[in-house]
Image 1 (tube, rainbow, N blue to C red):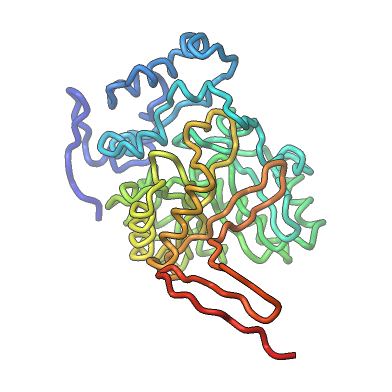
Image 2 (image 1 turned 45 degrees about the vertical axis):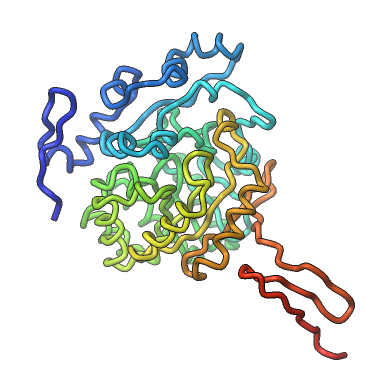
Amino acid sequence: MRIEFKKTLGSSTIQTSDWNSSAWQMRHSLKTKSDFEKYFSLSDSETLAFDEESGRQNLNSIEKLFKFRCTPYYASLAQNCEAIRTIVVPKIQEYQTGWQSLSDPLLEKENNPVPRVIHRYPDRALLLVTDFCSVYCRYCTRKHFTGRDQAFLSESDLIQALDYFQQHTEIREVILSGGDPLTLGTAQLEQVLFRLRQIEHIEIIRIGSRMPVVCPQRIDIELVKTLRKYGPVFLMTHFNHPDELSFEAAEALSLFVDHGIPVFNQSVLLKEVNNDPEILRLLSRKLLYLRVKPYYLFICDPVRGTNHLKVPLAEAEAIQKKLWGSLSGLGMPNFSLDIPQGGGKISIVPNFEIARDEKSRTYCGFDGITASYFDPAP
């Protein structure tokens, strides 16, 4: 049951029934500078970002900014958390190109055999069911596709995708992505799930969504029962900061898990958001308490407009090493980097080895204990 309250915004009072409606959240999303000004006192950097012509001139840039959008719910979280504000409110630094500034850092366009399908790994493929998100995160890696008002994929695109999956029997998993698949209506989503389940060799369906984070009002009984009907379906959600785990978000996650839908979390390591071992430790523990597995912690992709959000790799490695001995395996996400130019994911693991010879290797653990491990005798 949702908490009853009346929320005020300026001189307006928002009724509980409206605030708890995902349709209301979507209709009243922040999309312009004036919308954002109702929630935030914009800094000079943020003001220049919204004022595109001034922002470009200020940095002598030709870059065009990624779209702006935010649900009122997520904006209310950002009002009280600077880290969340960094995720959703644009800054003038987005016009800077930085050392590495790519429109398609993972070369998805070159791994796009038919419309809306990305096939980079042999046994799994992405199906981009929509380009729409309820919140446009400033570090989005798929800016080349997301936010172009293409909405639900067309029937012809869906048929081509399904034919491709049918012909490629090595594909065992299909990941619904976008955009955000859970911005679709449940009936639209079911159309896709039903037709995927007609393909015998597809064993697993995953859904990547930030809706439990930015619009948990979307998660209801009808949705979770529909997903369970077409299981095994795994939900891959995307919490970056412990303050995103509100009461409403916790309710949404519980609905999934209570209906037999495993939930995994994928985060991105971001400067001034979560590049602190204490923040990441708290995030993991809160997720685990809610029965969500911390799955990946990604290094920020070198996509345009994100240079000011990137964390140096040496710092990322140091953060990981601090977490290594203070989080159980359940809580430790896989630190990963997606190799630019379509090279795929690699894991970043602390190096505990301090010496080796022909017979043994010597290690120093997280707590300073040092010992050698000897290979079996020939």
